[in-house]
Amino acid sequence: MIYLDYSATTPVNKEVLESFDKACLNFPGNANSLHKLGLNINKLISSATSQIAKILNVKNDEIIYTSSSSEANNLAIKGIAFKYQERGKHIITTKYEHSSINETIKYLESLGFEISYVKCNEYGQVDLIDLENLIRKDTILVSITAVNSEIGISEPIEEIAKILKKYSCFFHVDLTQSIGKININLDNIDLASISAHKIYGLKGIGILIKKEKISLEPLIHGGKSTTIYRSGTPAHPLIVSMSKALRLATNDIQNNYNYVKKLNDYLVDNLKKYPDVKINTNKYSIPHILNISILGIKAETMLHALEEYDIYISTKTACSDADSYSLNVYELTKDLERSKSSIRISLSHLTTFDELNKFLEIFDKCYKKLKLN
Image (tube, rainbow, N blue to C red; front, side, top):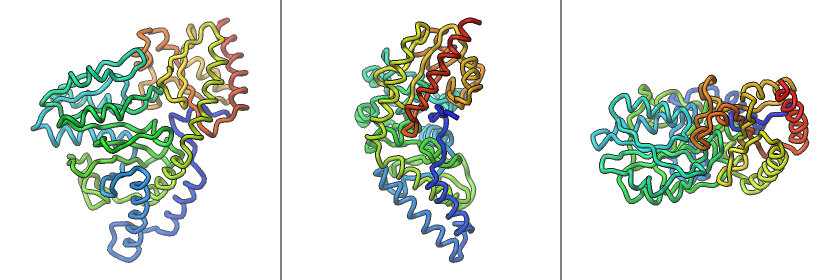
């Protein structure tokens, strides 16, 4: 198998899985229980939380555990909207957001919230002047993803954060595709979402960073948990495993980045030789994501052709509508054919050059065969 769909999900690191197993087997209790086992689980959670807080340079009580980045995005956006709607109902975002943000924004719009979409330049990066011009007295939230999940476009998050610091609105950043790949300073960011399964952790655990000055309206009400903002029995095995995943993923970011950049350059050099292959990623895209369009071949057709050789890529984000064209590629290129024929090849420091050579060999076969049909 050649796996080139790391942006959809990553394989679980064995050390992370071992942490999960130990927490499950050695601490079978409920963290909310008053007995000694429950108290020991609480200590375990506190230790894991302290490690996460140290890595992210935030405070322990600024960490809210969720089931995923999608839940974290929902909690951040709805939580702010419902808590501060007396202050205003204006939200600013982009047209390059993940569906868990797009659909949440649309839901709020149906409830009477007003949405503004900031302009982006030819590379898909936020127009900072337009962003500042859009801010109003009733603007309560700006939500912008750090790295686009389909094209890999990296936004100038720290520059945006500095601009927003002058205003009373909150700034939410989806870090799902950037955590463990690039460094981002969270000092001027109010809310940030991450997920374990994008950094070689287990599915079912994510985090919303919420700075202590901010309050939220919870999505889930109920009983005691690690925070008042998200009720439910604390999933301590997942929390412990996420701590390990985050530590491992952030250990050697620069070297891993440099290696993935070499992989990406190698792929681009080989793929751009095909006359009908158009490279959609650009100089502001992180190297972990390579988005291309193969004119004349539907995205799903190429995906399934490669799948026959046990090679796995994707068309759009795994959470998007399977029947639609890539809205992100269309927004960037304004070309419907390119958006219908775009595929995403996502790379990792685990990817080898041997795998890429095999992929290129099979890609050539599939390209020539499909072009003849």
